[in-house]
Image 1 (cartoon, rainbow, N blue to C red):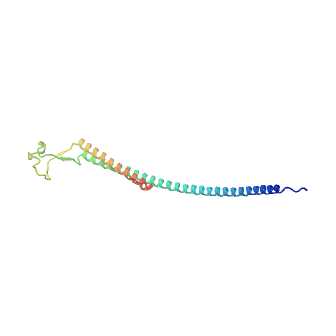
Image 2: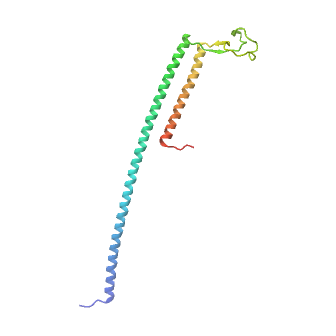
Length: 174
C-alpha cells in the first residue's frame, strides 16, 4: 500500500472537520429556529387569548349600554305618553269650560272696566283686570308649550344617552 501524502490527510481532516462543523451548525440553526417558532406560536396564542377576552369585555359593555339605552328610550316613550294624556285632559277641560285661561290686561282697556288712565302709575293688585282667552287661542298656546316640553324631554334623553355612552366606554372629552 502506498502511503498517502501528508497534505492529503490534512485535507481530508479539514474536509471532515468542515462537514462536521457544517452539520453541527445546521443542528444549532434548526434548534434556534424551532425555539423561535415556539416563542412566536406562544406569543400569537397569548395575543389571540387577550383579543378574545378584550372582545368579550367590549361585547358585554355594548350589551349593557344597549340595554340601558333601550330602557331610556322606553322611559322617554312613557314620559311622552303621560304628557300627552295630561295635555289631552287639560284641553278637554278648556273645551268644556272647566278651566278658563286668562291674561292680565292694562287698566285702560275699554273692556276691562273703569281703570286709571295711566297703567304705569296704577298699583298692581290681585284684582287686576283680566281678559279670558278663547278656546282656539288657549289650544294654540298649549300646543306651543307642549312642543317645547316634548323637545326638552327629547333633549334630556339625548344628553342621558350621550353620558351613558361616554361613561360606559370611558371616553375622554375635551
